[in-house]
Image (cartoon, rainbow, N blue to C red):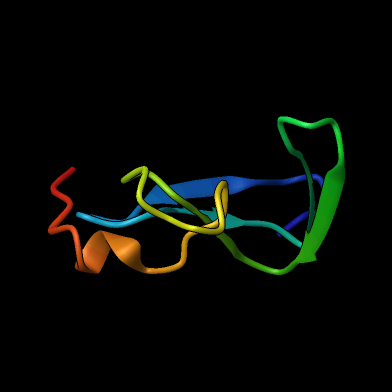
Length: 64
């Protein structure tokens, strides 16, 4: 995978998996976090670590 190539996979009933070497995420307060490797973004809205997934989708029975 090229360093600039990003692939996003929607996990059934789970998060969005972002396949990349490095990602910079800008949070609502303007701060940024940097993650290396695959990251998982919350789709269910229940994560206590938004925008990252904390597996809360399993406890809220998320379908999507």
